[in-house]
Image 1 (cartoon, helix red, strand yellow):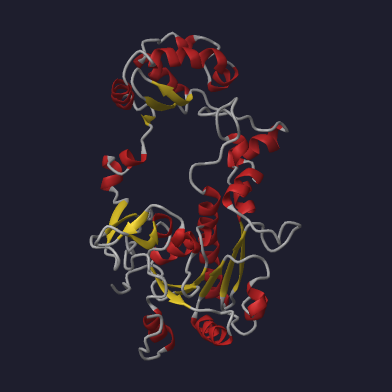
Image 2 (cartoon, one colour):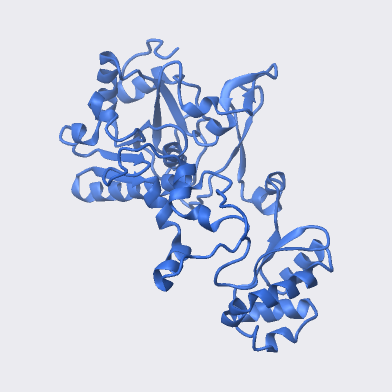
Length: 401
């Protein structure tokens, strides 16, 4: 497969010195948008997540390959080159690639790359147009800057675990590494902003991204609850601190979500539920009143919903445009008609697998420069020759094979 010129970022060269999830998720987005992303990996080792399994991709004989599901999730639309930049010849080669790059993304601990001459301060004068994005746990400044950062740790420190889980239960992490993924998303936004600045001025810059900063930023309205009231935001389980009813309820057979966002929707729900009297009760007439009286109202609604199966409620409420939905298991997600229609499950040929590999698609929809799927997540070092040819103009030499 070759790069398509239709991509919004076609022609952009991205040198990817990241591992695990936050950095690779950012560079995958850039790759999906058409950038030529070259993933630099340790020879014979590669990205740490290659070994984070099971499950692993299966070969033609049904045996595990070196590619874990975790690795596959964040490394599409990249090519891999194996370089040991702890050695002099590796540093020379890497610097030649930096000279060709528009963007460099790395997620090493503070100061690690500077030991080999690849910190931002080492490169900015020689390559003034370079966009250098550093992703760390705590950023380039502050008392925690030297520490290693991990998603789980940052979820705890950044407050999201205090908001997640049963009201009377233990704090709970989110089921995916959301601090990593959101940092990768914000990093992409920062890189695109820096590229536009370079277009106007010719100057590159550093994009300093921290997991903890991102986690605090996307506390969003829950964080603002505290800043406005001075009261720590309460944990509401599957409920909502400032909207009622807005939570999970169990029907007679399965769970569903009821997400009433305004008084009109509440009145429609009550009509469907056979309780048109509830909106006339001063305790429930407005959202503010329902929030104050949730301990009374929520058990009433729970009792009503428990009387009939989930299918009844979804059909009746959707007909009245009352927001609701099923709580899908992961297998149900990928067979949901809307998810299927939007192409969120894709398949790509992979050199280690006999059949196309299923992957999660990009959510970005661009009318003129659509996302393209050009490269399956690469085998470690498999694209060395191609990268040297395309970036440095060198003939094939067997590099990486």
